[in-house]
Image 1 (cartoon, one colour):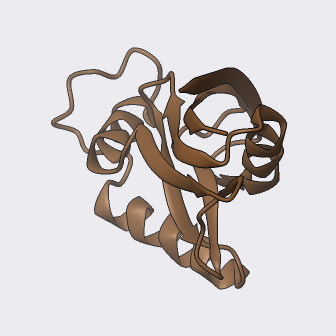
Image 2 (cartoon, helix red, strand yellow):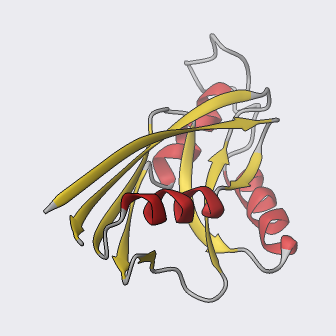
Length: 140
């Protein structure tokens, strides 16, 4: 059993989906593990991870719009507002999605579907530098 770990830093420019599939593919190739499980984990509480379609940009637009309507800013009943009006809505969006994703690795490649990519889903309006830890365990 072999393991490999790395941390990706993904700069964001505000709310939206930021694909990092090429970096994941590069990490898996460099790890030289043929069969295993890749775990991606984001170390923050106001963003999340998604596996989603990467062929049509309208998917990103619609997801952004859906989450903005589902958890809008300006809910006057929220208590946690210290960091601005987008802070607690960002935490709620992160709670509704996921901070960890498991991806099988077969024949030295992460197993994505034809139209799938992995994204960091930024829920805050201002730019951030987000850390995603990649951990691959398996056999050569």
